Length: 192
Ligand SMILES: Nc1ncnc2c1ncn2[C@@H]1O[C@H](COP(=O)(O)OP(=O)(O)OP(=O)(O)O)[C@@H](O)[C@H]1O
Image (cartoon, rainbow, N blue to C red):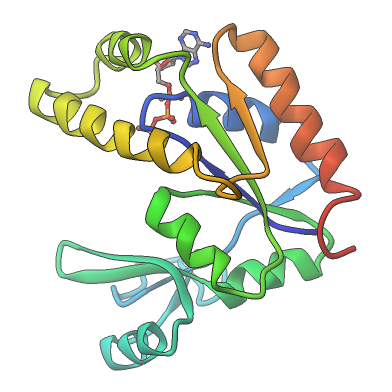
């Protein structure tokens, strides 16, 4: 099954929609196992919670272009590898990647044969209202998210950036559109 990339500004509703999608379709999706350089915690198993690795091996894989996204948090590296996503596809599951613009560009450089969906807010004004309504971000964070949102919306307008754009105006309608495109479309789109 072809992996599906969903992107869209922070606050466009990706988590809201994906949480419901995974619940409604428990056997359709698979989750990629991330890499990390942090130590395993008791009960964690290599290849299950994470692919545990060391900094040297991690950075080597970065150099080889093996990651779709990676970042450093609290002194440790974390990343989603191309291989981890392929492993999900090989099991016949759809791997949904909820990533931002740079990640989207990165996926396009790989041979993942992914499908690209952009979830758009109806407008930047409504996005701002929703971010405030969510109540999870400081004023500073909201301003940064809005600045970034403008860039993502501009990128989404470029020819070929995404195969499908869904506007999250009325949640129920947007959910149905996403469900149809990802689940039904996913059976026929991309590699097998
Ligand atoms: N269609 C909608 N109408 C009104 N409110 C909505 C709609 N869709 C989502 N929301 C609300 O907007 C807020 C942002 O949604 P959500 O957290 O799912 O966004 P997100 O894209 O996952 O953001 P992030 O990338 O920061 O995780 C939430 O409070 C959510 O309840």
